[in-house]
Image 1 (cartoon, rainbow, N blue to C red):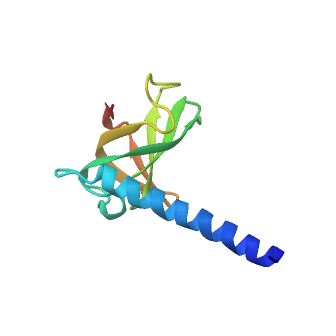
Image 2 (image 1 turned 45 degrees about the vertical axis):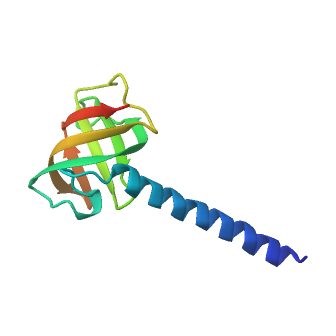
Image 3 (image 1 turned 90 degrees about the vertical axis):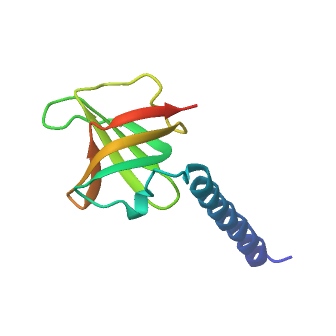
Length: 120
């Protein structure tokens, strides 16, 4: 077996696992009453469900801010809690629902200080 064919198989397996992960996220977070992140409108009240991918402390304008990225397999959204250094239960891999208004800022879609509920 050549090195090229091994590399192709490895890349193919990696791509298939990523696609499966996206399909699993879509199925897990598809629930009545919630919008999909990829289709949620800006500047309107939205209810979303997803899984946290990253959680970072990133000050904004001298104020502490906890920043997280959430995905449901249809898109990614940044959530920012201003004035918070940490929130118990907010960690990568955690599922949650959020409610608020998405605002575009610097080419990014951001949801500031949303109402949220952790999903067991």
